[in-house]
Length: 321
Image 1 (cartoon, rainbow, N blue to C red):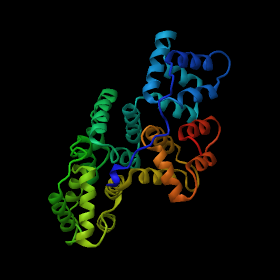
Image 2: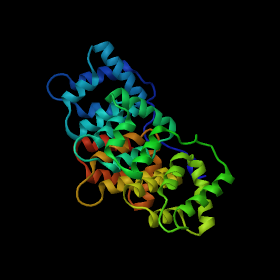
Image 3: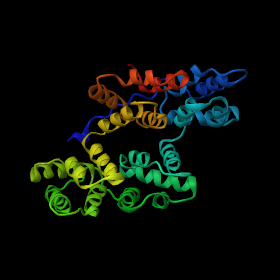
Image 4: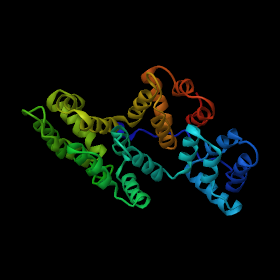
């Protein structure tokens, strides 16, 4: 199944790792007049998140200082966003991104979709627990206050973490679910949205892949075609994102990265978030997919869209051109 692609990261654990030496190197890079940004990139962009947490602990233990506070006081702009983002544990980083997407006037639905529709249950539970701890408010409650209708119900279901565990498959049920999707959409006048979001929010990604195959056998049309003809707006965006993540996650993120850099201006927030979040999971796969889809390397496009230390940090995480 395509879901079982072998994930290849671009950031691996540093060999001969010494948290104390790294902590002292970072202190030296920030001490006195001026900051040695190259040294900061050299250390933090070449360590895993787990190693960065050890460096942070060593920094406090041996120097009596808070590494994130020091970095914030020395750095600025998008370069600071990358480096401070790297220092946060993955679940806490995603919580900050979700909160930012809902805080203040307006809601960034695309960010909510990108994050929530690509997480598995274990990751979702981790994010939910951290969110309430960080913001003293349940994530589901915050989502409900910022969204509405079927889109809200879908995100709430995902947030509750009721998706079947990975590997859960039932061929007979898949045939039944394909029929349910057809009868809720193309097989009737109007659309029963509830059937769509219940199946796509509950079934494991393995199961959904079989359901989509069965749908094609049953109707001669792809699930993407069905969604496009039956749904619209945020609900369509969210469900089609789930479909893409089921069929090939790297494709989903390659498309998102391309969109973040295509046209006038760059969506730096999305660019930073995806590169940080996927660097230890499957950024190499995303790079390969990006080059295949757009006939140019992710490295070269990011290089052309960014500048300065911000550019150097992202390119260090992306790895070789």
